[in-house]
Length: 87
Image 1 (cartoon, rainbow, N blue to C red):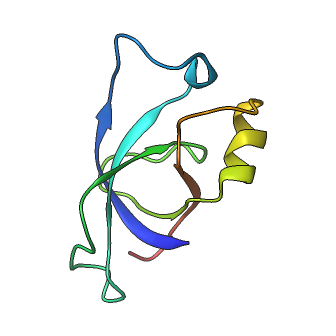
Image 2: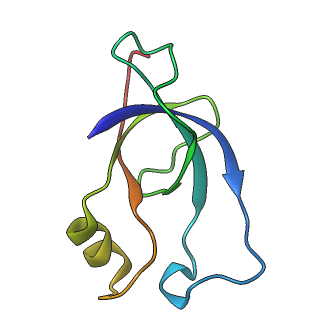
């Protein structure tokens, strides 16, 4: 699990069928200070109705994401699992 800030949304004209109906976000992983970037931006599947500028907790737990998407085979890796109240 890692903190990240939502910096945008992603759209795809063609996407894996397991992602149909899913909202894709561009997230910037953050260091512990909640300001400094920690690596490159990633694409995450939104499960908490996050918006641009929100700070969220993301996870790369594939099992959880497969359950959420109801698919045994999905190319998605990251998903949001919580909104942070005090960014």
